[in-house]
Length: 261
Image 1 (cartoon, rainbow, N blue to C red):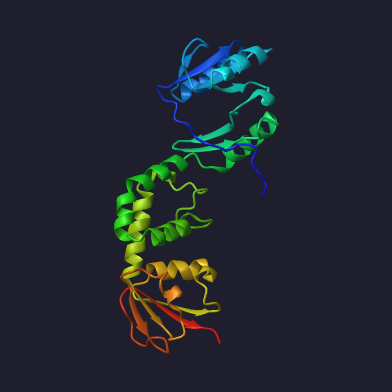
Image 2: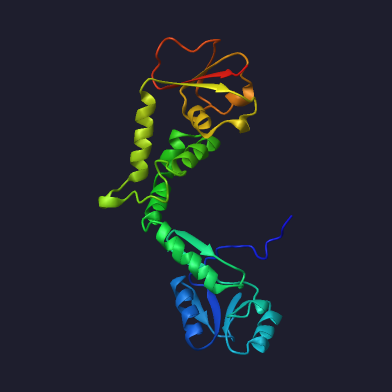
């Protein structure tokens, strides 16, 4: 197994002390970054768990700090670093960090510039709305596994909530809520989905099949369909054994399953 050179983590620094040692433009840039994160910038004599050293000859300073158990970032000296600072794309509360382990700051910056053009500026608003509607999502789909699958489908490429699309053009609001309402209303209309399964393994379900099962009001299935597949349906969905698809219409979504011969 390949070993990562470092583990990416996000650290909350608001009102927490961080040492900044050195001067010049490199130190000023790190100061601006720390202040943006809400950190309290202190000197070497203070107590802090993290330190950034921006000096031409940092070896002695880094050694003193490490002897105190402080984790150190030495600007432009990856060989002395306990941690590195990534290039950042800020779509708060969404933050994308690009790191190269100190190998090439230029490469990280180039990737950041590309991602700045790809990620819509409204991405943070989408994240905020998902948080605001968390309770509504849980109420609609109490089963966590089913809820995650439906959200995954909506957030997938081309999905109703595709995060790479600006959903807030023309001052639109409540995008997640409108998606949730539309999804509920669609499920009230009579609709039949028929699937011929080629495998008894639930992990082989297509995304469309898994989503339909997660949303179905009832599942009508041939006797050969295994329980492992049926378990992927909503817990409150009716289950009806039938060798043929239904003739009558039912309110909401009906899924008919049969095994391929």
